[in-house]
Image (cartoon, rainbow, N blue to C red; front, side):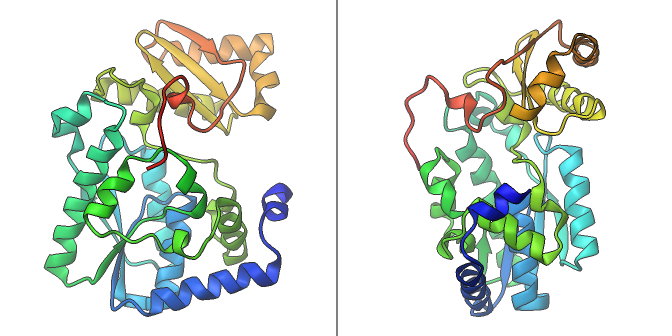
Length: 283
């Protein structure tokens, strides 16, 4: 992924930022890392463990909106890189305001997460809680940031001015397999706002995305539009998805997961497509 490395800072500047990150982490008496196993949290978990050793705990929140594929990846990285790791259960699906799926749905999810992590930190004597937000996230609509501020959650990657491309470059240098992992988000992000989040919908989305990966696609989203699935593929995979034989295989795979109709978005995958047509501001 040469474009990732080309987009990062000069090597000396990037290493200086990593050194500043590690130094800041060393100053923390102890730390819980909100750890999904994605690009950002995997690197933060690795950096925190490198800086603070056994004074760090990486915590994965398991719930119906968290894909099994990500859970397996989080467990494997923690095992292979000796990251102290635990999995807890969060119950955002029990919250009516979360299930109603307003535009600030993510706030209620993160409020549930940080409530659980704060209780764990208090019970175990951990000094701080950190998330994997990076410098690029400042310009994005992220209502979960409001919950983070309420709970005093810190963002070491953002504080170190590290962008996504730089985190990928540093992850590659550290040997983390997530360095070129496609961007990820919870399964609920595939459901349009104001459409209720249900476990049935989440399972249909996860099954359909797994089926598409089995067909060899890597960058993708399955948007749940009632009985229809709208598929988004990476720009370099759109042509393959449009081949007649593959198009038939895609339709059969997705319909087999509980949808009645399938459409492919000709614009392909792009970050934040759920927010298109809605006036939002960065949080």
